[in-house]
Amino acid sequence: MVDRVNEYWSVAWLLSVSAGILLAVLFVYYLHRWHRRRKHALLGYGLIITALIYVVLAAISANALWIVIEVVGSLLFLLLVWMAYQYSFWFLAMGWLIHIVWDIGGHPFSNAPYIPDWYPAMCAGFDLVVGLYIVGMLVSHSRRADSRG
Image 1 (tube, one colour):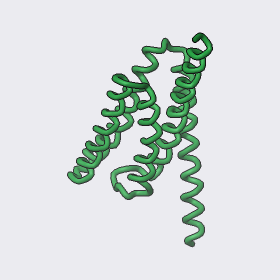
Image 2 (tube, one colour):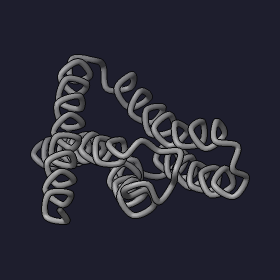
Image 3 (cartoon, helix red, strand yellow):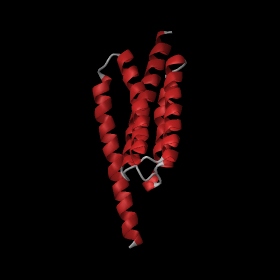
């Protein structure tokens, strides 16, 4: 019985991560054609929205402790977005990649009872692709700048 439950969770987790990856690939494909400034803005807003989804879910649950935890987490991601626009866009890449830890570390398998079981894994898959996309953009931009120098 325990093996069957573990098998279910691993299959469900893999499907959820795969769904997040697929959604992110579609998002990045759509985003890739945009002008750099609009793309950067959407990526920043996207991270804030991704963090705020957890706040909304916590608010629906009306659990004050989880609301505070989610608001504090959202403020951290808001700070990273602000730092990206003030200092370096690497902070935004870092924010998307750190959000994976927030998804999996803070919300695994009903630790937070207001989060659907599939959501953290799906969000982590999405965050991974978007974070790596930003890293790729930054590295590519850096290489182009170096070759012109």
